[in-house]
Amino acid sequence: MKKVLALLLSVIICASITVACSSGKKDEKKSDRTQQAEVVVFAAASMTETLSELGDRFQTEHPEIELTFNFDSSGTLKTQIQEGADCDLFISAAQKQMNALDITADKEKNPDGLDFIDPDTRLDLLENKVALVVPEGNPKNIRSYEDLAKRLNDGSVLLAMGNADVPVGQYTQKIFDYYKLNEEKLAEAGLLTYGSNVKEVTTQVAEGAVDCGIIYQTDAYSAGPDIVDTATEEMCGKVVYPAAVLKASKHPEAAKQFLEYLQSDQAKEVFTKVGFTPIK
Image (cartoon, rainbow, N blue to C red):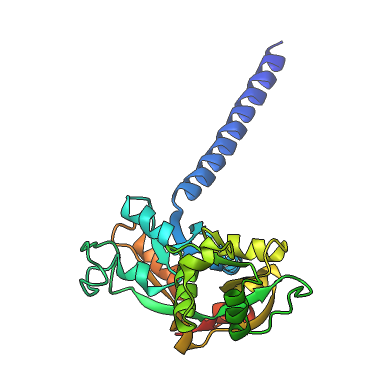
């Protein structure tokens, strides 16, 4: 009987030790997860597929850093940052939204004196092109921006474009100015539809809901609409994507590390493949 009790006691002690060890390992793993630096990246919607791919690659190489992405129009992201949203790294599809958050920018570009980004980290990351795209088969046989301007003037096409607070919409407005097109009159005539970001415009074209649309060439690569023309610098200026770490970043060093990765040869290869032109 004593031997049986001793054996039972031995089994209970071993089981307790095993459970304790197992619990310790779980706690250790949990501790490792809590030690991860979560970097929140606000990026233009036109970067969704590319940054998601690069983010996965980066996290494989740097398991100590967790990336969380928020993709939307640069205007919406700028407003969210201004209203206090958690953000470590901002990548805009235009200088306008970045300037509006940079205290070192001219007062004309930052009239509210906003001071959200670390100017020492700011850089121009990529260049894109503003593309005129059409649905599969190009039913209206639209061939160029000049052709589009003529068709808008005679009221024979329906064009999708970004809202006025969206960079791609602002680039489109510059193209309208170049061709002396009156956006208000075109809208009143029912020749324009709008999207709150470039992805919405791209979807309208891809689904054939419109005759054509103005988006970035990188979105055409991702979603499939055919490019018939790209705008020159004279037509709408350079399409530059600036990036910067925010002053309020909770993990500035980790955010800088990811920004540095986006300038690596590996990242440049991915960006180039979808139509971006790396600047640095």
